[in-house]
Structures are given as C-alpha cells and as structure tokens.
Length: 319
Length: 319
Image (cartoon, rainbow over all chains, first blue to last red; front, top):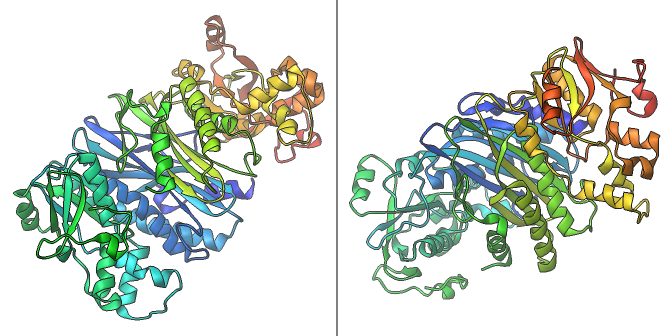
C-alpha cells in the first residue's frame, strides 16, 4: 500500500467520515451514494483553495481545515440547504503525518459544527491545494436563489461584517497584534460559521440570498444583476463589531464591512413585512438597505446622498 | 470583471453547460440544483489530475479535457450509474485563451459522448491541476459495489486491456512512433470511453464491479478485499488488442494488460449463468478468471499453475 493510499485510509477513519444520515455509502467504492428524500433537490457547490493564493503557506493546518470546510459549506447556507456531506480532493507536496492529523482535526471540528460528513475524495501529490465539493438538500422550489429580489424588499445581512477582512493584515503577517479584539477578528477569519440555520429559516421568506464571499458590495451586485433590480445600501446601517471598530478605526472598519468577503455572512432580500417577524423569532438580522427599480448597487450615506465608491477605492463598482 | 470571472462566464457558455435533464439549476448561483428521480440514489465521485504527476505538461489541452472528464465519468460506469453532470475546479497558472478554448472543446466532446453536463465549479490561479466531481443516479439497491463477489462467480472485463499503458512511453516522449498501431493506443490513452452502457446493463446481474484505474491486478485486489474472496486471474484469457501485441510484443503487452490502469475498462464478477446471456445480447465481455473461497488475487497460467507476479515486477501483489 503506497503512502497516498494510506492517507485515504486515514481520512476514511476520521470522525467526520462516519456513515449515516443521507449518506447511504461513504468512502471506499467507485462512488459514494446519497439518498435525497422525496420532494427535495440536491444542492452542489465546489470551491478550490490554493496555497499562496487563498491562504498563506505555511499556516496552521488545524485552522486551514476548519476554514476550508466553512468556506464551502457557506454556499449551502446561501441556498437555504440542509447539509449532507462533502468530498475532499487534497493535493499535498509530501506526506507529513503531523500536518495531516491537524488538518483532519480541523475538518472534523467544522464538520461536527455543520453536521457534514466526508463522503469521498482523492489525495494526490503536487503543490498544496484543496477542492471541496459540498452537498445539501432543499425542498423543491424552496432553494434561495439570487434572482428573486423585488423592488420594495429590504436588503438584509445576517450579522456584523468586515471582521475577517479586518484580521487580514495579521493573517498576512503585515501587522502584529495580541489584543482581545485581534483574537476575535482572527477567529472570524479562520473559523467562519456558515449560517446554515438562518438560511433554512429564510426558506419561503427571502426573495434572494447568497453568502458574502466577494464582499458586500460585490455580492449585492450579483443579486442586482440576477434579479434585474437596483440595490441601495445605506452605509450607516452596515453592522460593524466593536472589535473591528476598536482594532481598525471607524473608516477602515467600514471599508472592511463593505468590501471584505471572508466573513461568510448571508445577504438576502426580504419583503418588508417579513423582517419584524424574523426579528421577533430572535434572528440577529440587520436591514441595511432596500431594493428598487433600476440596476446595479448604490451606496448612500445617512442622509440618502450617493457615496462615490470609486473615491473610497472600490472603483470596480459603479453606482 | 476580473479575468478569472470572465473564464467562469466562458465555461458557463460552453455547450456542455446547457441546462436540462436532471439539472434543475446549473452554473451561476451559490449551488447547482439536481433532481434525483424518486426511487434512485445519487452517485458521486471526485478525481484530481495534477500537471507533471497525472499528465505531462505541456500537453494537448483538447486531449487533456477529454481525458479528464473520461477518467472521472468512468467511476459512474463502475457503479452502473446513469450520468447526470459534473463540476470542474480548474487551477491554471495564467489565462491563455487558446489553451482554455481547446480544453473546453475537449470537455465538450467527451461530455456529449457521455451525456454529461457541466453544472458548476471554480477557476483559480495556481499550478495547473483540475478536480472533477461527477454525478450520476442509480435505482436504490442496484448500484454496482465492490463487495458482492461470490465464490463460483466468473471474473470478467469489458474489453481489451493494456492499450493505454502501451501508449505511455509515447505519451511520456520516451519513444517515437507514427504507426497505425501507435495511433490506436494513443487514442485509448487520451480518449478512454467510459463503459456507461455496460455498467447500466450489469445492474441486477454483476455481483461486484469497478472501473480499472489502478491496473487489473490491483483493482481485482480491491474487489477481493471488499468481498472477502479470492480472485483467480487466468493470464492466458486476458484480452489484448492486436495493436498492443504488434506494438509492444506479447510479453510487454501482457504486462500492460495486467498492470496498466489507464484504459478505464470495467472489471466485474458475474454468476456463471449470466455470462452467456450477456454475450448473447452482444456485450463484448470476456471471462478471465473466477471467484473462489480465500483472499487476495492469484494469477495462473493456462495450465492453472501459479504465476509468481513478484518475478514479473509486480511485487506489491501477493497471490
């Protein structure tokens, strides 16, 4: 048995590779077998992380395992899906048992938190990278698409934005920080929590949704384009954490909140009458703007005046 | 729009990305949506190909596109699945429109032949590699597993073996050849044809099956282990093509047939009474041995004497 085949057995023995749930057959045959309940559809998404491009190398393999699975699973949250499992295609330059053990422990931690199972994959030799394909299920017709936003809807997000982007200078080694605030931001970067429960709660309520991976303004433009509407973002309403405000200052914090994509918080549009009901149920959601006739994304200040985003350094967006 | 986002749009416009079939929602949202018919299960498999490890670089991108999809789709054949579609996670060092165009044309060609659809994926910058995740469906309980081989079954394969392995010295540039035979072998290497129809025909008949990707003897050992049986391979019955025999000579041809895994032909076990019925239906199948009580794989000559595979250079196998 070669060392790479040994690794496959190693992952097959990981806690998150246990059978059960909708996984009828896991690791070990030509294919895994998934059972999709009658009346539901399968949701599928694929993401690749490349060393030196999507994460620094070397980095803590435990944190990398957590983050890799969270980034992919967040796409299930953006569809309102119930998680099933994932495949892991891992390419590594050499076999380092300590690295693999910590990476698998990070995967296990995130998998347990997200109710995900490792159902298969591939391990190959080459420059460090990983492709995770995630699977979920959603009742037919209830998937949260990007294309249903209606003029008059509120534009909402599922929590504070920009924390992970605020941590980026520390992650990249450009800045040293050992404060409580820095630690809070770093947790958001390395262990983003896919908003799966919120996504499921938005089924039948949100008219459009996605997880913010490219940054609030960029991802709003995806909803605007898919739904053929204008999204108006009130920058004074963008929720920013105390940690971020303290660590980065108000101006940089807002910049992170508008352009940072690493939090994996949901953005969605909601009919105005649904918003108070969701809030009453205790969902920590924030209305940060509204949907209007038109196209694109418009950023406005507290007085409703247009903010020229190009002056703020976001010149790939027009308003 | 960045150049990598342009590429995503480019793939979204490829012929194989058309919607329809079991693909309820293709490229463009957080996830794709697949509909699995009632009474069927989803089959999933993931394979990574890394430049310099799984294929030479540079190589013809059209042929690479064909081969990448064929290698992955063959796992669906090994399960007896009906193809649905695939995701493509493509990592490229830089954007070369000619390369991408030819690669996509290769994917399209193979996708059309296999009735596969591109349903999503990711394009990232980094050292050249690709991870394809393929999806199929199979009636509940009819997937062809590795674990059901019974003593008394025949061991069969779906066609001539070793052609692609025979082409390997040419592929690697170690040998020059412009003969008709060499061209035939190269076609088998670059454009393997997943035996999807055969796999589906074996539903309810084969007791175990897989596609040969590691080599006949290695893959037989997977069936033997999963089924807790002994597989006896009669080396005189291993089907070898005239092209391979002419190109490589009898001894090297047999070596390719026993150890070469790049043909992606099915290997399966079949109750003895099912074999003539399959042959009568015109399936080009070959009985090359049988299943017995015991464990592992035993290679025997025409007189039934044990062939010491370690003497033939396959010392990672025991018989």
